[in-house]
Length: 66
Length: 567
Picture (cartoon, each protein chain N blue to C red):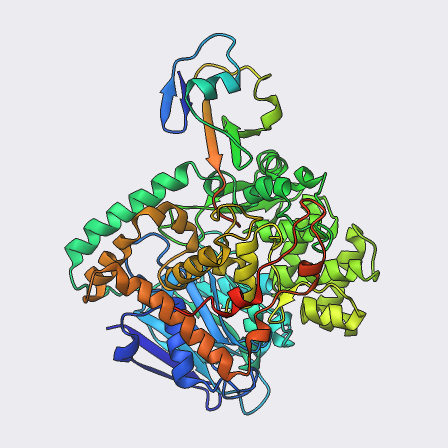
């Protein structure tokens, strides 16, 4: 299983991070930051990096300034 | 019954009495506005005997509501010349509430030169003590000596040489919960200078042996509502970048859309901002034993703070925030997080506002005093500020003082206070807030980024700025602003909480009225201090120079600025 924010999806062999995000019906844009297992992943490699089973993806939306 | 401490620095006395009925159910920014209009002549000299330094707990202090122990510091600002409320996290609000103290008013000035400490011991005994041994100490060394004497569980609030020398950008530094580092700041508006003018080096509060409990109007109801509120905020924070990374995460958005200031608000896009971005920050934390998800006060579920170590894994700074990184970073063409962390540490130590000082450095670069991106030269100027050289004192007086001294044409200030790290051409509502907030150019007063229809368009920008400024005015009276986005869909809960604690109406209109009244009171104070509509303006270059990143100018009509608070 892969956890995306508050939901879980089924892991499939060879799936990329982007595949998992699409499977989880989550959207991303300029104001989102993607973390996989507590590390930030740049958006331009989401479709290139495969994800491991039991990973946790966090899609973080920037809504405030610092 | 909540108490008020009046500290008279002229006769070195402290009086403890019940809080007046008028202020009983107020706190934070709203309390400061009301107290100032009633008790301080707006025309007074900010560093003279008539001004007062106010330290106030929030409306919800003493309860278990998350972030209720934010502390508000106020007075007439030595920097803006108007009213100032600057709030901070840290441990002091919690400890102050533990002794049942809602506010401290520090009046008058000492008859002779000297420094004093206000000390509240664990039994609640209050003394004003000679602090001449601490003269000239900066905040980190001061706190170390205080912990040696009073124990690690004391909470501190102090000034470094910035405040002692009355630098107009001087901050007041507060120790953080658990870590104890003096890295939380009531930074804006030079309130450290006001504290220095009173001869007050620090306030030390020991943990109360018998913790004060507020007189709830309906304790069970409050408990039920506060559990609901805390869960709502914790749930929102869990998937929010401030909790998972820190406020620096904001740069991942502003760096892309032209809102991030680059080379003294030139309007360019930075190609290199990721060198000081969230990924680099997280990698440095992980590889050096640093940490994030830290609460700066007890009971905070947002936990946006951090501890940043140097390359040798030794503590360098904490509370390392977006504003500091953006303004010392891309805005000075410096792309090294370790150097910027050193700058943050120096500012916290001396006790000066990172926003005003970083802007002062950028203006120094723009005016040709030092080269763009020359971090060694920038650190050299900051050393001058620490040592108190002629230029160091000018830098300590903030961005505008530097710009005027160097004859700079592009000085990014409103009401003499430097802009935070959002280019107002590309977030126009924030530009309206910078222009019209009684606080001067203050992003926390109403940051509209991402909340208007189009950040670069003109439609509804004044509307959004107005609504946010009102909301933030009541929020700054109640808790930390960083719970706002998690609570925004359920703000009426605040009215219910207020009523359960103090009684009275639970209708949300009571909360909204607090926001409106606070802003109008602050505006009235500023008018009395001599401010006019001409003070509600951005520097002209934002209206005449296009942002190179987007082609946008700040093109909001003056009329929209003039009527923004015609409720």
